[in-house]
Length: 73
Image 1 (cartoon, rainbow, N blue to C red):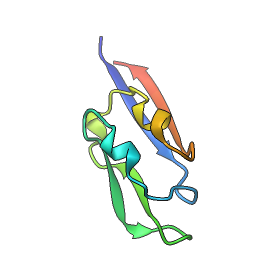
Image 2: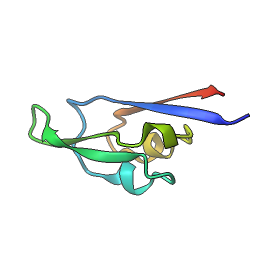
Image 3: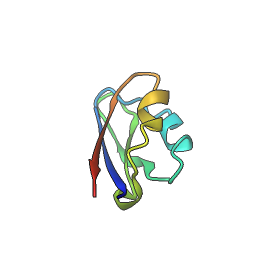
Image 4: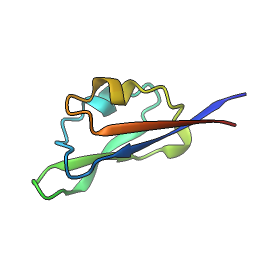
């Protein structure tokens, strides 16, 4: 049974530091082309089908703006 994951990013608090993307073992996360209200690009799931819900992104996020959800498939 595999784990399927999903992340939710608080788009207005994300500073686009890219630490989550660098630490994602399955390269799920990328930064958006558009910017939030503060002028930063935001993290998003570029490859949602590859997310395992490992929580690396939430653990390394310096501003704690990522919530990870996991479901069993």
